[in-house]
Image (cartoon, rainbow, N blue to C red; front, side, top):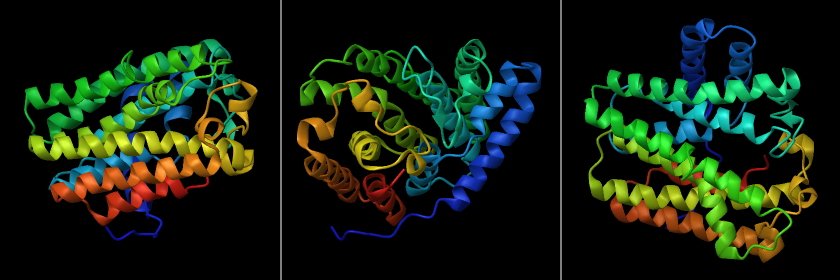
Length: 299
């Protein structure tokens, strides 16, 4: 499979996602009021890669989708934003900096940040259902998209992975144990983003299976790259505090495999994921470039 080294240009997709997020905030948050609504907007509209939302759009396009999927992508981004709010809390990773600015609990308060994160989950579920409905998918497909999203956010996904991550602090985890943590904590929503884009385009089962493998591979590769960046990048490059994994005595891929071994593992996962799409005939240049960017990025 020929490799591509071009950095993907997400600017157009990110602009569409930003407009959809603005519209969602303007429609939903006034009813919530201050300060929780303000904290939600602060988090939702914070700068970021929007990778998960972009994956919804790229996968939808790869599967032949012809509608405007930006609002559905924005719903996925709200779930990701919620996870960052709670991940940064003092009882979790206790971070003061996110995306180059104060974390939500620092800008508002711990109580407000906790409430804002909780409120973002039902907001995302409603937004996902309504966005799918506007695509004309039918109630069964709409409900399945919401189920995929909430499964990734819940005890079998991000929340469960976060608990495993906290329980693993100060312990030596095996590679299998570490991969279990991060397939849930980080990989679940990335995999769900790919699946949601495909389901929105009514992809057949064989294509869903190939995309599921791609999503699992790049989701884990993303976390491995994060572990590497935590020990090789600066806080300015990351937009958050570097060196947190060492400070919290976490098992990481560089600690288990070495930096070069971790990079090699991530690159092998990217190859596996792209090959799955190539075999199914749905490997687009954008999906391949995005997978390779996940490993090559510096933030």
